[in-house]
Image (cartoon, rainbow, N blue to C red):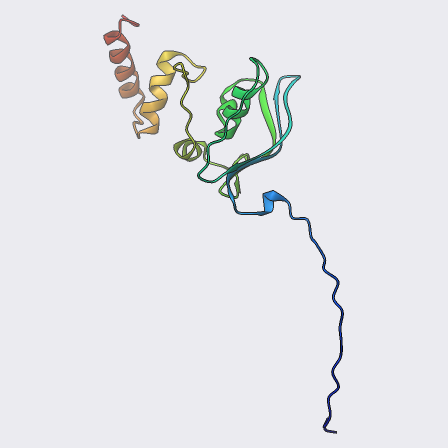
Length: 160
């Protein structure tokens, strides 16, 4: 059978607005979703959702002790270095959740750095901070690392 005549059909379409979460948009370089940070039993950061738009300056302002530094340290996983600290939620960098165990923290910290008003080494000894840098730059020999650390500390009159 062949159709020889067509009839126009009038269709009314109702406009539908769909709410899109800002986290689904690609307009941000970094974001946190439901971020929680704990120091032992102390729930320091509670469910923070925050977007950092690409190529814009974002300021975190608040009184001393309100969690600004804790939040910033979460962004490049520096809180992982603090004993008893744990984080839950998503930390998205270019759409990738970097708050996962399998993420290489060295690469994260190469991409996401922090500049403090005052020097802020890892919460380790000065020796361990120097050794960390040497190891990250490929030095594997324990005696070589120890010798270099001791030599540098002696030059600073920190170790005799």
